[in-house]
Length: 383
Image (cartoon, rainbow, N blue to C red; front, side, top):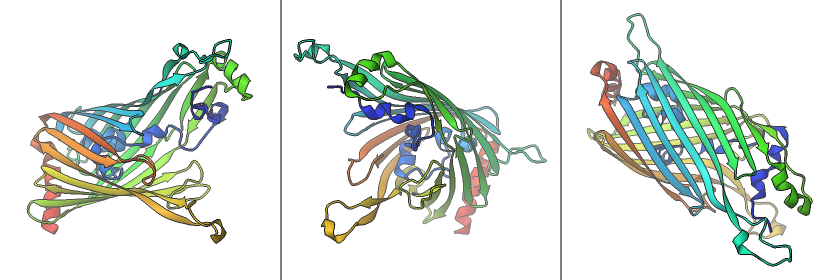
């Protein structure tokens, strides 16, 4: 008996490879607002979580300092996902961001020595280890300046991330990785447009495997022992557009759409090919006096094969999608967001409750924020 999940020591550890879904823990998303809107945040994000969604949007933050925390449990509490974020306004046109993301499975039993030399079970020999993926992200955003020297806060801004990644499978293997993202955001009258190029440098993870520790079990089972390797994460492109609509004097509606382009082979997405796959994501947010928010979204479109059928009737498939929803409450400088969401297949995995909080300090000068309020007023006047 050997209880270490073999998929954790997958063939990607052999040599150099570019597997699908590499570093996929960085595709889950952060902040209950974004999760409730099905990750359609490339153009809609305007707070500290921009470090993850689109670093160029850090310039939309209206406070000198912003902090954010999130904890979520997935798969019945087996996996824990934690996020902490920080953003700082360096000056009127540039921002700095920092975030830490961890996805971990703790207390995994190691049963390599469960049986003694006589074949008897000795439960005292069971030990436990942790498998974790951790990413530290440093961000910088800068707005374009024009002839008058003032930042065009709602014009064109650029952002970049530098990522340090550590992945660890107990004492058996660990990998270090580095990569970069670049992004831009543009305000076109009442529309917000965003683009995010993740892993633009082709992020890598250099894996080191303790073969001596694995050799006894792998030799008994006839499996090849994994060796040191380089795992590559290919670039991904996200393009988004969002717009606000006024429903009444107190109620507004934000609509947001993202298109996710992946280039790591054919995926089970709405549009797929051997070169590129495209997955749409849609998000909606109703707000009441900018204090109470109701959110919903839809994404994760997949074609599912139907197995519970008469085999003589031929192959049967159907399209599935994942709906999400959530709420938010803004209490001056303190924000509480909640999302009911799922990172797996909607038909097979239970939904998870995700909470995140945000705290802001030191409102920036009115000169810096006037363009944002002016843009919102233009939307109301147009409607």
